[in-house]
Length: 224
Image (cartoon, rainbow, N blue to C red; front, side, top):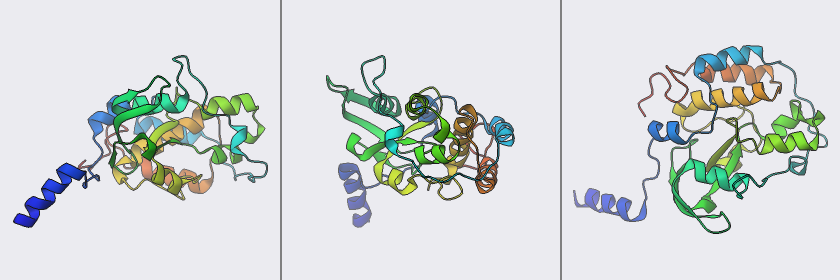
């Protein structure tokens, strides 16, 4: 009993327990914009062109200029950190100095902006091999800084590194209850930007969308 009490105290003091389920109410309030419902995503998925990926020859992150300065004087990264965090405080240069962020891919909570990356839902290299290689640099920059669609998400840096440039058939979030939202966002970005998908990618997205309930943020059967 004493051990359990001591552990609870340590949790409160040091924040040991960071794997709390993702709070859907918060997700609805601060999610990237434009995530379609699961049913809408399925309809859009059926219309996306299926093609084998092109080679990654010539790819460079420099061909997707980011992070751009936005109308508020902050850059794209800083705006996403403010949007996706809670009680975020920034300095005169727009850098986040305090706040709380929940990684939507793992459900874990973080209180340092240095622990957060801005993930491109559809990674830049994946975009390159599915159509963006033929775009102008300006268009690729618009894609890399897209705040109008569910392309940019504040996630833990280690999770972002694990995802790298993988498509859903090669990497999925650890938080399975986020599959619906993840797949819906991926489909929306590919649809809006007229990017192609592979057969394996389409099959996996379909499976992930099958977890959707009445909306894209709370899959059927989820207990989170």
